[in-house]
Length: 389
Image 1 (tube, one colour):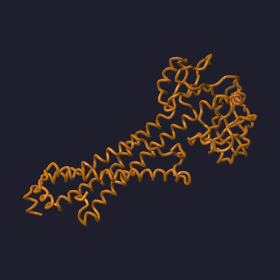
Image 2 (image 1 turned 90 degrees about the horizontal axis):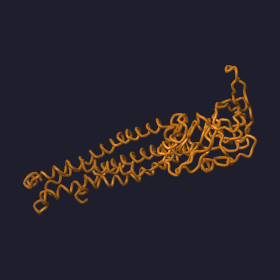
Image 3 (image 1 turned 45 degrees about the horizontal axis):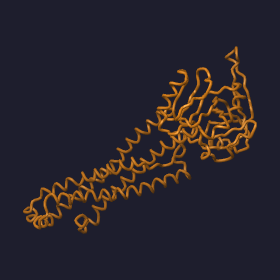
Image 4 (image 1 turned 90 degrees about the vertical axis):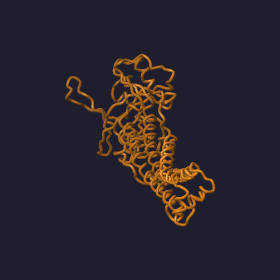
């Protein structure tokens, strides 16, 4: 450290400039990776909370019983249909899903998404709506909403008639995804069956597992048990393209922002190289006193490592602070358009694997940046230092 920071000119700029560059580069990497990881985590949470880990849509004959596997925690029958919602002359298309009121709590995790009202079905036609629809139409718990279902004409498919029922808003939730908040409506299974005149039938099951990582194996087992005509998917398959885009964007963003660290590493090279030139006489004096070339090489490599570790530590701390500032800004300002990014808000996630990758990449590039001036000092002879010192 004395060798690195000795000298007024060094203290005034170059070493500190290199350190600031490493801090800012590392901080940008931490923020970018935490936002991308948080986006993926928030999307995953919204999928699992609302649809469970596995979704089964029955296309063949209705099975006698529900699927039974050791990995399964609970099975929730559901009935889903498209309908129209109307109030005060305003009409919008919605997706109406009926669920079993006795079993939904063990399969869906909706309590932490509740914003207004109560998660109950204490009404003639109770419904839970998303916050987007509630804000757009100024709906509150207790508000009335007409649900309109177009029904085919039987022998004349070109003719339709409508079934209308008046529903009561019991709860307003944040479903996580923008289109769900705008269009998704949950009701009890019996009310939806009555509206659609489907009797006791249902479309399929929402399944919750002990472990979210077991979904692929469970899907394969269910395909072997259920009818080949049934459609079975896990939470990731429902948005596979979006998850794949996030993975690719994470890699691209990492490489692009890593250029900031690379530029800062050039400052390290410049700082240490100038240090070698300016301290030629001191280096020669140390060589005369018995310092070996290998020890001298280690001195400059340790200087690069010191700058890298210090900048990395400062960058991680600054990045975490910026991440929580980003979360705060989300709650008070519209930073993300849900119609574009699918999510209105995300919760930043600082993953250990991301921090490890940032740490390894930053330290490695700093050591490589220190290698050039270190080799210059290694090749410096005693006579050269005395002659030009």
